[in-house]
Length: 442
Ligand code: G6P
Image 1 (cartoon, rainbow, N blue to C red):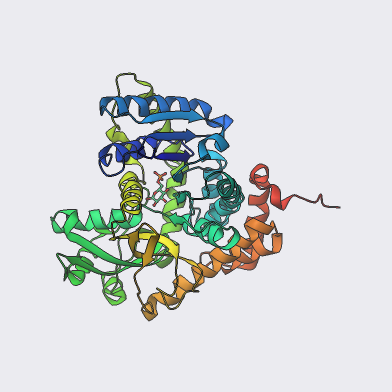
Image 2: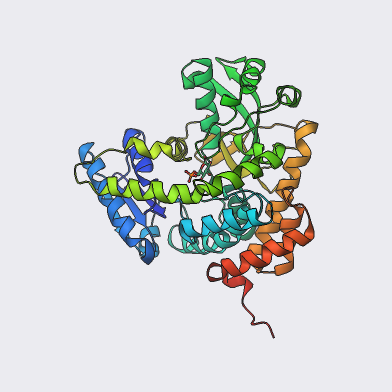
């Protein structure tokens, strides 16, 4: 008998689900999935129904016999799953809007995966992912966990450090977005472009870039000096690099580096746009409403192109390409978040890094990078320290540790401002941070 392939997607009611379903349809020949279980929570039931019905129509149009199950029973979905993908958002977009708005009041960047916003998203998310891991150990111990939930690097770090799950891969669409963007700039097919990636999630560098095996790094860096080419994702509007700086850096930054190398300008820009069109979460809330209206249309049976206005473009490509390569033991190269195991010399052995890996059925094997170039090494190490301390705060619910995490983050100007932000954010997110409110203050 042929084994049935079961995938469970936690956060299945997400507006991104049609991306994922499209990915499974496109790669069905290589990964003949039998059951896709879309799981959400009670509060997400309505969205789950809408997006789940669209998923069913997409599968039917493709003429495939993939069963789509919609459920709020996470344990039923996890039972005997072969792959578990996670794409949930604790506190929904309302919580993201707070992560983005509150720090701005203190003149500090508000962003969903960086600085204070990233810390608080991690504090809300990590306890939930650890719970999912405990369920997986019991209900599907053989399964692979493919985590797309942000902050993906910090979440992967927490799973590696605080659970027994070994089969975990953190995934992001930024590397694939960079390869696609560069292919477009060079006017070549994306399959001919390869970047040597190394660093951390949303803190990854392209150490070299090739077309058909020949380095084109200098040419690409020249392209990056044009402000129009400084971001490859829809959620970050690039504001251009100083050409002399980017040439001296001599590696390809990812769009998120703009928050670190252009902090003042980016904070100014965020403040301006938060007053005009709203923060990114507020923009996305409107976009989501439109998307779900479209999804309700019973005649719609494909992924609508409007979804490409979201920052997570190519998510399905990245996710299903990875699953397919693990399943088929392909041995191809893909950038993912995995245990370093010595690949990057300046990062601890057991920490999560985002690095080009060979993908096999035993999982990703990181390609050895050696030491990162001196100009970027320190920042990567500092962010790794931030992620580790933040993960510890999420697990322990210790106030001082949370304050420490925020203060050592390079986007935070002082311990005093960090304290003010932590205090306000803890109150604002009270409901989703029970670990910090275990003992009533006397
Ligand atoms: C990216 C990031 C994702 C993030 C997304 C946000 O490109 O890699 O980690 O979730 O953008 O996009 P959004 O449309 O929600 O702002």
